[in-house]
Image (tube, rainbow, N blue to C red):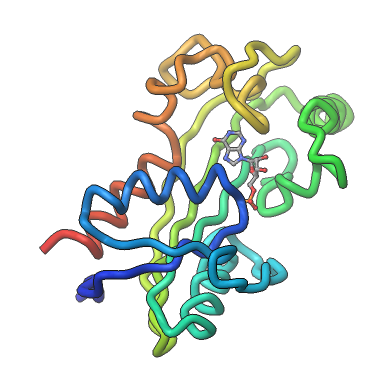
Length: 201
Ligand code: IMP
């Protein structure tokens, strides 16, 4: 049986404002009070895991241990079949020091060209982990499959959105209305799984 969240307060283990807002939007309607890593001066741990789940777990576990409160963390990225799953857990790092995603998308397009393969299958992944101060974690992963296109299209999203067309659609995430993206995304799938697993009776 998965462990249920029975507490009233949680740490959002992220220094990324965008992630904090998204996770807070999800938890506030459940009547949970929220603090962030930044609010309580928690360090940003190094992501040394070898999978999205491992990275989300280590971030949640460290924040829970240091704060004495349950903590929630996420880790996400884009996996491309013809590149053996790259950039994967290194998706943010492919954008360099300046977090330049035009550059990251160009790196992906060049790597695909160099691979000589025609396969353009890809998937966005989002791992979410809820950790408790006693070291216990509950984790889930949301995966959304699609195709890589080049040149990239649209400027509505972030990261690799302009080069990803989800299966069953013709527009890229960069062209899609954000509400439509948020309803079908890897993050929506993961959130839904975690709510069902740990926050509902
Ligand atoms: P991290 O979870 O902070 O390690 O970073 C995940 C990276 O994956 C982000 O910097 C984005 O480049 C990429 N990524 C994750 N989710 C999305 C998405 O929904 N759209 C576009 N890029 C994403």
